[in-house]
Image 1 (cartoon, chains in turn cyan, yellow):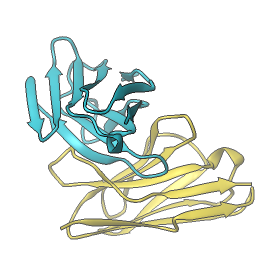
Image 2 (cartoon, chains in turn green, red):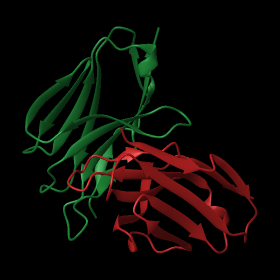
Image 3 (cartoon, rainbow over the protein chains, first blue to last red):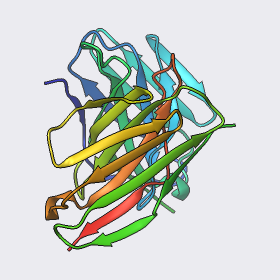
Image 4 (cartoon, helix red, strand yellow):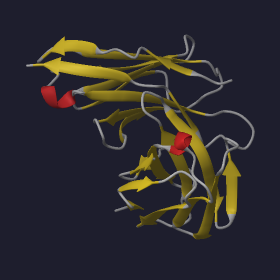
Length: 114
Length: 112
């Protein structure tokens, strides 16, 4: 069973701080990694994807990938109350004919306190 | 730009009643289409995916079915709903050669 693990939280950070969200995955053959943000009652929104080892930055968001450790993280700099949401980590399935499918973690709930 | 629609937005149905949820995508052709369910306190569960018209793959055996009658239309159905079918149903699409999935607004289903 391919798995994606996330700490469910809640993770609470003060406004302006760096929020660090972590994710581990079981399938060493996975190649594509995604972070989605889901506000309460809404559908998930893709905010970052990363395919290569290292860091990828987009505005206040940085995704970090370490394939050797099977670990992907999302850093949110200068956290704002509007960043309060559940963050879902997703990894492409790497088996059979399902390589386009994603396996999702259960998400980490982030709360940014003013 | 691409847009994905789902309807209805909310639905309350009695146990044993039928179900039909619809998803359409605009602005792209030959998308891969997906149906997910998100139950309260649980993660996203992939139900069905489709790589083309009439091509449906099921990930989880259950009383739900899916159909893709047109390139950009994906339908989720049930003949008889169970209480356990309650949840947030999400349709998503991805490009033909891409793993990035984009979600529709979802349908919140309550089975009573």
